[in-house]
Image 1: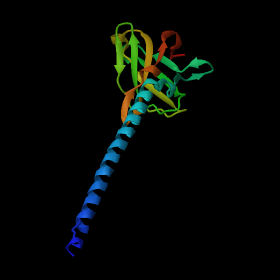
Image 2: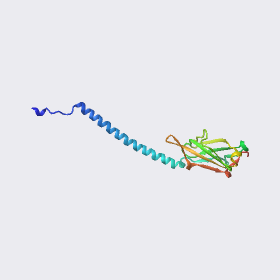
Image 3: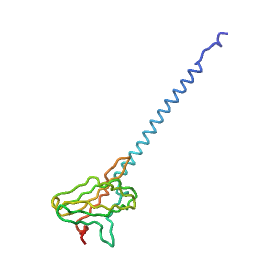
Length: 171
């Protein structure tokens, strides 16, 4: 009865082969899933970057119709004071500020403590050297939004206030 003496794969080798197959299949599925998730995240981040103006709506605060942006002082002791509202539904992480004068532009890349929550406001007084930059022509606020843990400029939500809307602080 030699025909019944056939040899097969030992149970130990069969178990190792099954485990190796399961691990390889798991690795393939994880890599496929990671690619799908990363693609969705990239699409979402791009959508946030291009449509950030729908999430952030900066507006100069007003009291009785008077804009709460004013310029005061004289010479090297000039200043700009403003109150800014966030009417959007996303938090503004940082704010860049450009103060355009007749001679040149004074730029502050990031105002300290300038985060504004949705529905919140920011009140600041910024020194502005009138002798160096000239008479103030405009104030431009450029918000930055947190996208994937990175502070990203939202140029489409920029707010610019021109001279006609800037009152004197001495009133």
